[in-house]
Amino acid sequence: MLYPIQTEEKRLIRRRSNLAAVAVMLMLVMTYVLGFGVAILQMFGVDVGLSTYMNGDTLTASDPNRYLVLNLVLYIGMLGVPALVGWLLLGTQQEKLQVYRPLSADRWVGYLMLGMGMCIFANIVAYGTTVAFSLFSLYPSDVPDTADGTLVNWLLSMVGTAVLPAILEELLFRGVVMGLLRPAGDRVAILVSALLFSLAHGTLTQIPFAFVLGLVFGFLYVRTGSLLVPMALHFLNNGMAVTFECLVPVLGEDTVTLIVYLVYAVLALLGAIGAAYLHTRRDRPLQAIGQGASALSYGQRLKAALCTVVMIIVLVWSALQLPMNVEYDPDREQPSGVEDVQPDDGLFAGDGNGESAGVAWS
Image (cartoon, rainbow, N blue to C red):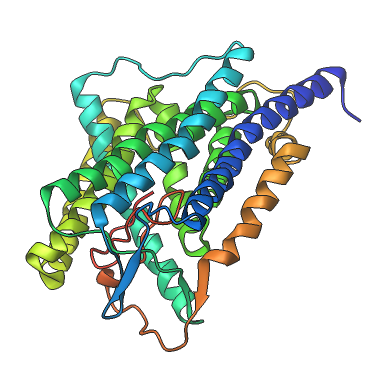
């Protein structure tokens, strides 16, 4: 039996959860609406720039830059509209986006170092997941290679895969979803937003990586109180992946793979240094996040956040999409090193693959 204060708190959490799920559901709807629009244009013979060809064993975009521009436009529609609607929904609950909070320069550097170290761990998880699925001959569906080694190509890739995701995905999943779920406690808000973030990426092999990254971004958002911190980390992680991929045609796969190993090692070391430094400043960034004052237990608040009508629809809808982006290929060679890591392809297919670079992005 629940006391009246517990019942009221549950109602608040469920109402906020439904609003958060509506924003994410709109992203799923926009994905299909825009995809249908592109299909209609192609049906009437309009060349939208999605043509591909096989370059040896690699699926390659016929016009990489045009392909990237189209996906950039589609991405703005898929994420920009839900982020805007989510921000409006957040306002109806008298909540504000915590985009900026003053941090000293040394704390900024410390949190970025710590965050990048955590991102390296997430990339290792991505590699382990890829290897595990490959044992059962399961691989992510191929997306066209869009890297041609030119400066324009790199800039387009950076905008579409690093700049826009860092802004729009963080606004939606950390700013809006976590903001709406804050009454359930920070730990619930971080967990649920990370779950939605991972499922939104639409591929079984990407879920563990995106989930870990979602936990990292949410954790640091709560710790710093500034959305700019996870935005910066999201940009750095994805930008690193884009840069490595674009370097492959210039330096060769073996050279880039070696650079990836070295960067991983350096960033892991910097992450440890950043954590130690913040600890000496009494930021205690690794301290467990408390649940705050609540009449409900953690389990009750988590259940209230997950078990609402709209949230269940979003979770089931997202889960049903996962098998569509996985291929069974018993003849494909299993991964043997970081050069074979299947990256996180963002929230839609076609924003590059980065497979040869061995760095995942979100």
